[in-house]
Image (cartoon, rainbow, N blue to C red; front, side, top):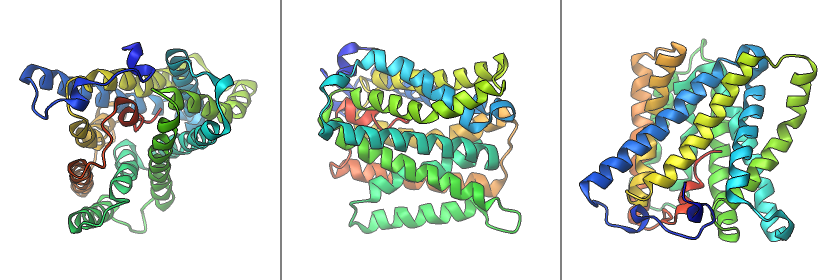
Length: 316
């Protein structure tokens, strides 16, 4: 990881270069982004193995500890120099981080990895459509709505609570992105998400104390949760900083939309959660709508091209 990027002192070739770029650079960027996506989704699947012992909240608590332990020393935010104008978006960012992560893991526990991650990706889609006045964006929104219906096929056997919680994760991610834009304008590099990771961790300290006092933490559950923290936070952050050297920022945003597909595959391999045909069709519709909306936003200049701003859309 380039320290200059962590502290906001540089730009990437991908963010400022041509869409095509040298073929070898593009391939390297694609491989890095794919590796980051696989790491993120496999990590979520591994973390789910700790649910029976410490629950989703326990996994999130350990994951936040790992994220803070890596991000804070790397970004070195000067807390003593923060003004209230810088603190308030960081505090809200930490709360949004806590919300989206607990919603994601509870949804994984209730409705499965592939469905939970797909629903969560409605958050970035909503942000991309937020300032839209285009009929194409409207069509993307309609396609995503149809995709959600096809994905969940509401019926008497549907876990409506799990679906609502998954949508809560989408709302949390949308808030995370919007707050990161504000915080990113007031703090350089990754200082905002690093500081927010500490705020989020503080919210989970009571959970960790309760689990520790009740003796529910075991070596195996801690290993699963710590692996989730490393694979879902540390590896993707580092990979994003690398991949943005080789691919354009807009392409990066579009390519991130394959994560629901990677999540579904991870759910099959890691958790044995096999999806049926209508679920695959719903995922395909939502991924297509998300990728198209982000691509259209990029063409209109609504996707930020600076490393710190774009990487900040990664959940920590």
